[in-house]
Length: 330
Ligand SMILES: C[S@@+](CC[C@H](N)C(=O)[O-])C[C@H]1O[C@@H](n2cnc3c(N)ncnc32)[C@H](O)[C@@H]1O
Image 1 (tube, rainbow, N blue to C red):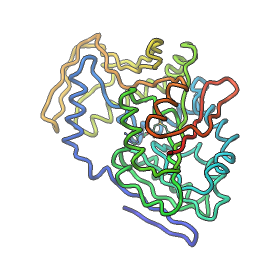
Image 2: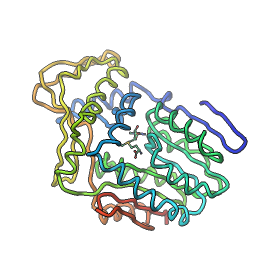
Image 3: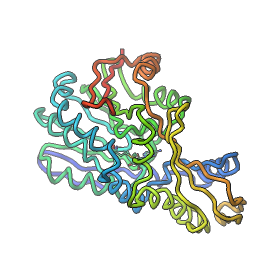
Image 4: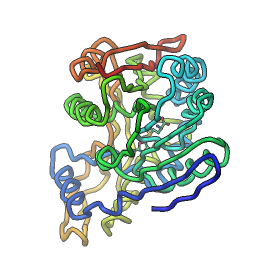
């Protein structure tokens, strides 16, 4: 843990990942690599380089989600603050917290401003927290560096303030429907009656727009996808060679999800010395590295309602490409 204080605020970073059992996460990784098709959890996109590449993706002309969600937040953050009143802001998968600034600006009207960014990528939380702490005079930040599960178990006590959980960037889309319900159940336990959950959701739209967003012309998304293998080399001492794989993203229309793959170009074996294992890859097979579900609002609202999260208000952009939904625990 590291901490600094000023007269008005406090910055504390809590490193939960250090408590993570590499053998246990290694087992889960190998389980995914033994499935057909092989899968790797999208959390492994995010190391120092992966988080930096994601920031570049957010700026790409084809990648509309960040810009669109930012537009909505810019317009409605004051209204959200007026609805919730002062609240502790806990953001899951906070990344660079760039869009969160619209909310922080709106909540600055309250005397006390508590922000808890949560992210598995240490470098991006350190960078974002330090900058926000310099810029927002009354801000107290407790950055939790760890997985969603670890962070939810270590949330600071919100005291008398209501809590608003924030989950932007349509990161929810990375969970299957079943995982998403499990996630709602888990996050719901960190909320009391009257607390809020703010979700940013990418909507179903034409394949052309979606596939362009995940196959950009500059190859940044391809580099981001391939970097996952380098991350696994660092983490588990594996010997993936990125030249043996190629990025591919398609929109699966019936399932309403982008599927991001690493196609294997040649049959070869990858060793994981720290896990005492080898895995065979066949030329022509692919690893599923991410799904990004594109939502139908009504269905999601029903799922949220089943977890006791009632829709307070939904906002969208002029093209209805992206939605922001505020729910409250009833
Ligand atoms: C799609 S990015 C979204 C970032 C930011 N919220 C935005 O909207 O631009 C997903 C973020 O979630 C983080 N993340 C991914 N898997 C995670 C996990 N299992 N636990 C905690 N954070 C995770 C990543 O490091 C990344 O910063």
